[in-house]
Image (cartoon, rainbow, N blue to C red; front, side, top):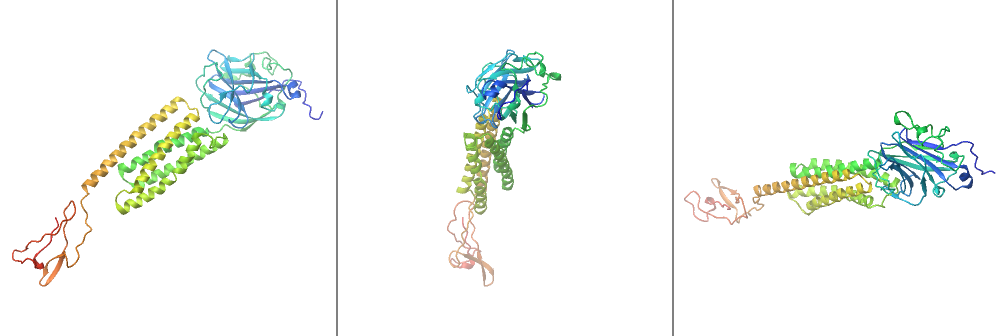
Length: 444
């Protein structure tokens, strides 16, 4: 037949190591299942015991992916947890696939091994053709839980690969991992152990890595945005009331502005890849905050121009101050939502909250100090600065400049309060009232 499945004479399990000598996966499709297009599929997942968890999933992103995640159960055995991805959040236990953990599973020689069959995986993958898969893992402490719904923390890294399951045929519909590829019986990991406790998966069979493990974009996004909103923006706001240098303030905040957009770009790429863009509160609110921040430099320029002209604050000044405070606060709050979305460890959330609180206290203190200084300056230099100039021929007084010449006397004002009416008195001792030669006006 033109479309017949080739009959395997030996086990030809497809295998791949997402992390060389540390995390490897094998899959075997019985030839009877391949010929029928449905049936059991056998998996073996192995990872060093130093891994908190390791997992693979169908598709090219977490969203909608059917996953198999393994972790130590705390009693020398391994838990296999089928889960469903819903975006960049902790995948939840799922009953969409049916599995059975097989003989040879457990922890031996520092290696976690999970042998299991999936009885309905033909509904989520093409068991006779090529499929896209993802892999993810985290190292650190043991989960130590036998529950398939145990909480797990965010992965350290991920990779993607393609698997051609037409090259994964095995002879019998039985556990292929009791007899290793060499034909020697074992416990599921004896034939796969490498030196120094590492895994030796051999060359990849039927599998192709689509990309190497990449930098954790979620972590990079979080670090950049934390620096921008929890450190740079607040410190830039603190600079102004403490040192009063608008150019330093503006320059600092523009650096924070650029950093914010760099972090937004990283987050955008990750959200788009995971199909989370505008589908989560964090991504929606984050976009609103970044777009809203565009207005702040414009208001700042208007405030600066107003202050230079009037030497005091106006409506635009308070708009700049309070609008900036509001956007900065929402940005910091959204950072907390991001940590929740990423299923960050509690230690991260606590550290973020403490730092944000300390920065908030410092900002409030600097604002108070700045206001006190401004009030003192207003009181010290708040004397009345007159713009009044007497009109010629009315209240303007004259004093002798020379014989037959007179020069106007400029009125003097009191240091505080409004000017009073001019008072006149004889000058020089001999003058007559009404003679402008001998009288000067003084404003008290």
